[in-house]
Image (cartoon, rainbow, N blue to C red; front, side, top):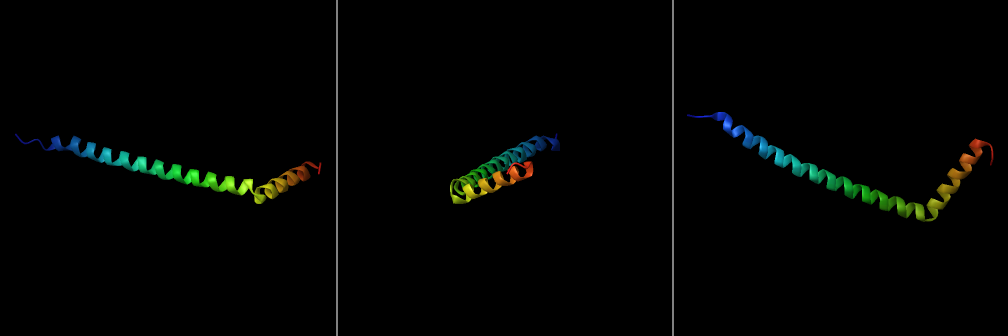
Length: 68
C-alpha cells in the first residue's frame, strides 16, 4: 500500500530546521550591528564631538524653558 502523505512530516521538519538556522543567523547579524553601533556612539560621545553635542542640547533645553 502506497501512502504519499508519509513524506510530508519529513519535508516540514527539514524546512523547519532550515528556518531555525536562518533565524539564528539573523540574530547574529543584528547583534553584530548593534554592537558596532554602540561602539560608534561610544567613540563619538566620549570625544570632543560628544561634549559639544551635549552642551548644545543642554543650552537648547534651557533656552526652551526660558532659563538660559
